[in-house]
Image (cartoon, rainbow, N blue to C red; front, side, top):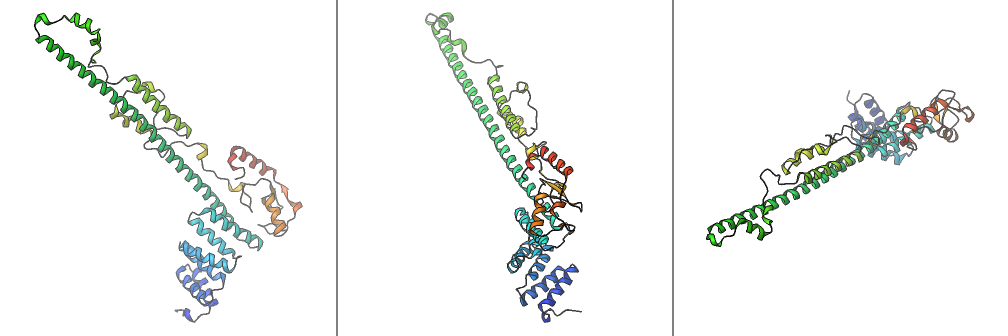
Length: 370
């Protein structure tokens, strides 16, 4: 039977929307809630109900808009805060997600509403995702920086080798010119009359023996190997130092630079570039780049932060002393999870958990105050 939605009151439309939502028909539910809002746009729950439908359909911007409107009408709309937190988390806006979910959790405690572990689990997930996001951003920045610095070091080595190559080539050209000049002079001397010629010994005496250094044997390298080796070793050393600074493992071992073969410009890329290309993924990362995560069992049931002073209640639930005392003082004298009556003098220090927390902080100093 087709429903005539236009003839329904806003409350009837809300009820129909609830039924469609329960049947997983989010689009029809949105239609009902939208008509209810048109007939009476001053009821906060209509917006938060429609926000949940948008959330299910992954239409996060529309869901957030409805959550904001719902909270304008009712600042204590717990579900609006919870759904907004879910939307922010889906959009990887983890700071906003934690803020909204924490308010939802506080409202649940104040109003004695039991949502099981749904809100608490969402807060823990949002915090974990936030830490992972920050760590990933830092890792990418460090990788980009190391890649850039590696590139500068390699380019500097190439530049020095090129300058050395050009210098040697210039020296070779000068030597060739000197040889040709000497040959021309010899030919000219041979063409003169015998009486006008001087002996080779006289030529040497007149020249001070300076002709002996002209030209290089064919089997001599055009570049001093030791100088080239120093450039190669310096480049390799800088790459190793940079690699150690970032606590990364290089792709090739360069323990003994003296064993590296001499190379010219055409070999620079073959030897140096494998050190930096491809850079990621690195085979090893340092402790600063490890994912930082506090186990759920070390987090308080109220603050969701690392417990500094864990205490246990008669119900067997462990809380952080500061958080549970604030709850007893501000909300009421009952266990926030079991709802059993609870007073200050019933809080017993959980020494076993305290020892576990201390051990965790000893091994993970970054978690202190996290």
